[in-house]
Image 1 (cartoon, rainbow, N blue to C red):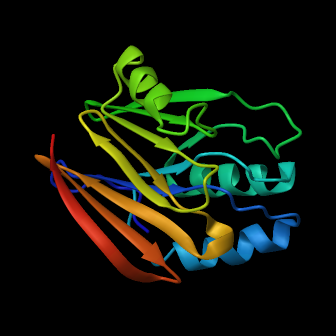
Image 2: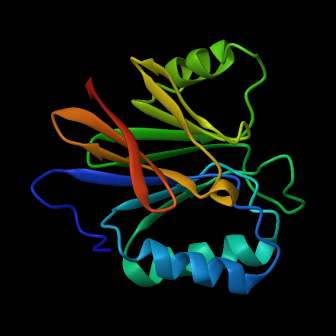
Length: 173
């Protein structure tokens, strides 16, 4: 993990639904994440414990990584419901729970926020719902799932399960 933007490429590690109840679980997961190079860590809710949230936030601060986090339906501590972060000309948004089964509410939210990318959680599975704006679910950490989005001239989205890449796609920016 670098936390440094190389050659105008931004790397976003997107996670959701960690459902960690102990700080030790978060620390163990961070050891795994350190093998990846990323500039931004997005957590789309359901930390489950405040300790998990604080551990990830501290990790990002110590490593020069931007951190965007939102509250999930299982989080019983104060976090924003919708988050927005601007980084290197990219407008990134996050929200945990879609309101509509077809995710159309998230499409309109991304457009309203003028987001280039919106990351959401809650459904515990991979999903790409739109490419303009790009919005997707990285799956659930509790199922070993996460996503890595590389942003340069295009969006390169990679989905992982258990540390192995299982799918990828390229979208025009």
